Length: 121
Image 1 (cartoon, rainbow, N blue to C red):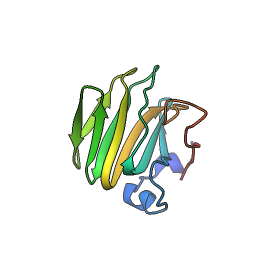
Image 2 (cartoon, helix red, strand yellow):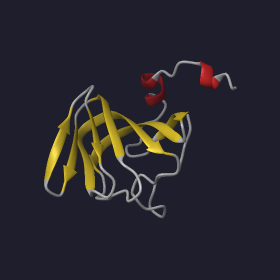
Image 3 (cartoon, rainbow, N blue to C red):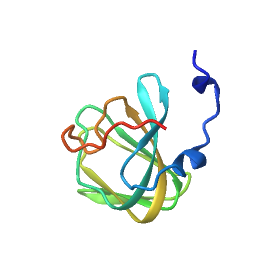
Image 4 (cartoon, one colour):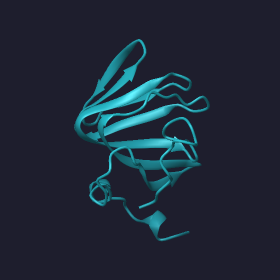
């Protein structure tokens, strides 16, 4: 067992290590899933995940999850799960900090060709 797995993760400290929006960073692992933090700013591409749901938990700021038939607005402490196969496009008018939990290997754009690389911090 590694020391990392026995230490608390300070999400604010991890988020302070990078500034690029839409470039999630892995901060932990859980039963075959990555726990990630990301900064959202502006609009992200429309996409879907055919094999997995997409979980968003807002830590700071406001995020709108645009859906083809409406939208869900999230503030700090609120989460939303986009069911697999549903097209969505996250949006943040100003920088927002978000925690994501995804099955390891899930491309953030729904496509391996255009996805952000997996980065651990």
